[in-house]
Length: 110
Image (cartoon, rainbow, N blue to C red):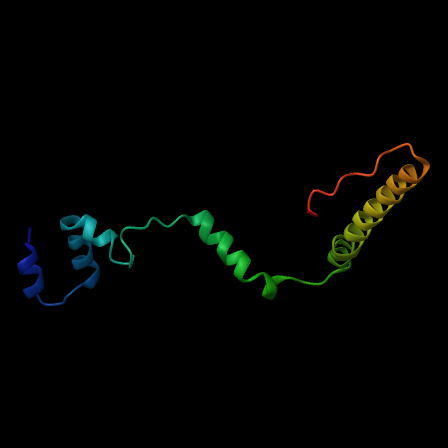
């Protein structure tokens, strides 16, 4: 078996064979050759998530289904929330006007 010094001096006959010998002699060095930051572990799930998040614009297609979902979430949901808040405030003001409920104290005004 050749040592690392003899591997450097050996003529380049077969790159695959030399690579296999290097893998056997230096397994840790061979595993770390392609990773620039050895201290970090790369999680494939996080890599897939980042790829999908960064490339969403190039893969997103405006179909009728996505358009309807976008309109519901962008216009319908906020409109329903505003309607519910306004309705509850008008009911509260009516109860205060009739005398059934006391006016709530404003803790922010000093």
